[in-house]
Length: 242
Image (tube, rainbow, N blue to C red):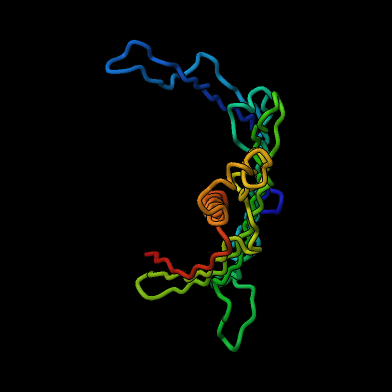
């Protein structure tokens, strides 16, 4: 199998349909009126493009690589209803020293010290998601872009009766990037909604029983860990095959 045969390129047209929702007040209900969420007859259709390229080694040793990109083309008016990234890139690159006759690493005597040892990187990029800026009619901003790099080292061992053990060391968010999922629309920050620094609310804040404690507790309330992706995490594990 030659190199050209091991490189695969794919592309396709992406199309997603989202049903708009709206709130309707149900009047005359017992024991009282109540609001409910209904599906609108209007739908949002996001069109886009998906492209990918893959390289596969024909042996147990060598490089493997793949990359894909998804690009959507939402209408500006639909940003009121969607909070999804319109550009996502995923990529993977790995190298394995191989086993048996495919081995391509150093040896000490007859010992293939890096047999079935592999190292791989995973990278994802996501463009920030749109959010509406308050007190404006059609102004949108975007959350910060998302970048994630993972590193994985793994070593395979083969025992009797075709039992295989794979030991791996995985580092998620290798660069310890501070990826943000959500920001407060007033400030564009994940840890400040603008209330404590707003001139309009200083009188209200200073009238609290203990203004300093009030500010401290309010700041603690804003520190929501769900606004952020994971920090750097290291994992050690193993898997069995038979």
